[in-house]
Length: 242
Ligand code: F6R
Image (cartoon, rainbow, N blue to C red; front, side):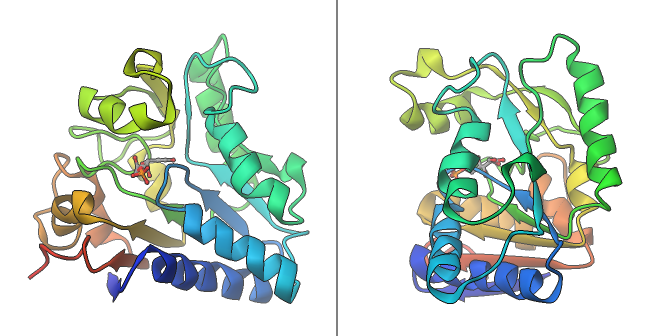
């Protein structure tokens, strides 16, 4: 695990986007794993800038979102499919039909999860997975106690995560209780994981990720077993590291 400590969120976004840009230049048909939440927004801003100003070409790339809320109507502005469209797909030249999300409104959620795993495998697996980290150490929405071998499935959000995500909704009552998320095992299959974290609120989780014991109580710590993980944090998120 490589840990890069930078000054602020903008630098974190720039360095993480640089890793993605290098991949897309060397492997134009790269498969990207796409996260949502606040942490990757500066990464998408920088990718949009690289596309507009330097012609970074995503026309042959594809993408798989990490997760999706269950129960939000199609087109809801906070559905992760919409967030990824707004923050990434619409701002570069990636083909929208090659950007996939788990189906949080499927009648047969289990079947949809299995189909999502199959689609990732059929695309050749994820080359680079962008990740954020929850204040409780979750990756994707694999909350504390998740199986470290899990695959895409439905999960219940903890109250802490619902509170953390309430800032995106008019009130906490509107934050869904369930999500469909790639499993920990699914994330661990990505060839390169780039995890970004900023702000003091993430410092304990980053400590658990980098220095803690590997434990399902801080799911991100399993990345210590991943052969190629780059953790990019600002100094506030790194403040509890030894
Ligand atoms: C989002 C996701 C989550 C977030 C995490 C941090 O697709 O899978 O694991 O990365 O909850 O969220 P922010 O960045 O909003 O603090």
